[in-house]
Length: 173
Image (cartoon, rainbow, N blue to C red; front, side):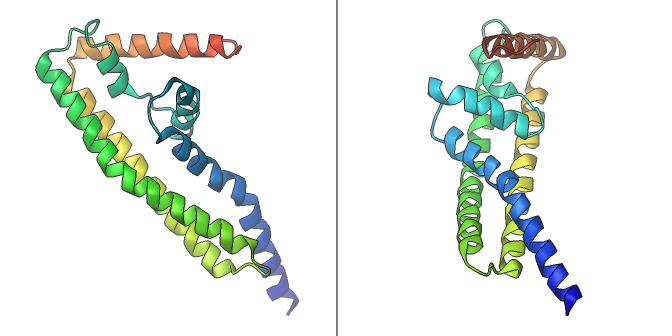
């Protein structure tokens, strides 16, 4: 009986300790999915760091198409890749937000249904994995559109952008 109680208590502690980590990505998705307004740009940087540090290469390339000497065909392909990513990721982000809301509600109950909580956490992680793969796929497809020289220029632009962002945030570079 004591071992069952310890197992339940341990599971509850693990579930509760995961709440901040579980809700942080959802909050960032909710904040960044509302558009490209200037007020969301700092939030987007946090989300990109949480996604493994990949920069928004396609958007940067499109913003700097003249410096990269992108052809109209390259621009069209990059825009198509970005649109496809957004179209595929939006419903997944919505599902993720819904599952996280259900998880939060179920954890408010006393006692919390740990089996249900575990299932919701697993569902959320599966959706995060799908989002991550879609992002990697879009980035790889975007890279394939650019020449080697354009990819090098893009790395330099992203590096300068990251350096300027850190400086504007008061962080050492």
